[in-house]
Length: 443
Image (cartoon, rainbow, N blue to C red; front, side, top):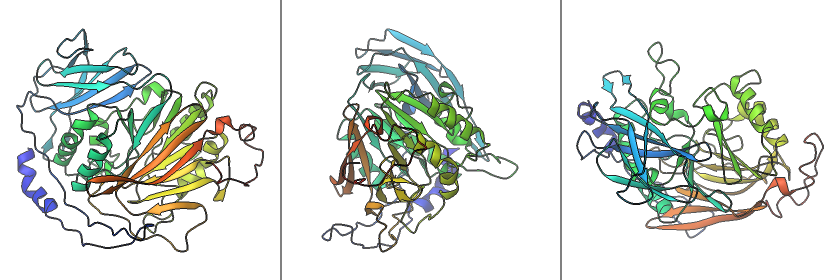
């Protein structure tokens, strides 16, 4: 069915966004023009695995996901610590879905383990075909996250992925808007192929964005059909009832993926789940808490202004009282970093909020920020790029935002972060008022 859609996608492939020039916070940097959409084809046999990606499941397991055109391939993964020698074997499940005239391939999901930390494993999907490999995250700090939102599948996407892959990391975090298929289902297949060289080697942990909804009245009113079928996350392991929000722990860091497009009011399942999830965290064992969501709660860009406000009003107090360290968002196609904030005021015990929806989407950059800049916003720039959060130990982490600058990845914003779990003042009752002095000395 994919070939039937190619004439439709040819329109996407020739989309030209109007070139726009704009100065960043560097006076000598001229914004590069947006780049075209890339459709990536499957060039191997119907039996060969494609769109291979991995995700964390529990403390020592990994889910391997892939697609085959053939319906006869078994959902098995063979794996081991030496190339070509597979001492482990696991059988999983498979699914498929239909979307109007489109019928997906056979979508396989197999969980393997237990696995040793910081170890390279070689694996094969379906009992034949090419060999892949991945490295498990460490059991203890230090730990490095790559962070990229609103990825899409353009030439800028390729640039971002190449920059991410040029330096080692342990886990990739993606705060929504993956393929930008927007109901054109073969673009989900194309996206899986473009990210496979990276997502097959390191675990990718994602949450949904608005471009994953793809709802259709009566036929598919709840949406997320392709997203849930292709990118299952470990929601059940965290006590969630929905793939749209979940949490996981890795090397002293508790990561919470919230759903901007699931119900979030105080009576919702997501709110109750978040409340229970935060209550379980032992900051002596897990000193860092990182949250991801799609629509930003704090944003000085004119794009999508206020779209995350209702969720902020519903949930911000929960994050504040739990002393969440960092909140990453996407949606706005630019980069912005705020100081520690709570309830629209600088607060040394609030999270650092960052928008990083600049992975390479086809819609282009969100070029306009409100002026004058809010004193809460410490750095903002409409450029494509990605970020890296290196959690060094129980008290300190280092954040850097890497701008895509043609063939180079240039670090343009960086800051040391101190875990709120190491602050005696902040770890007192969340109901106590904390002064805002020296909030910017060290975030």
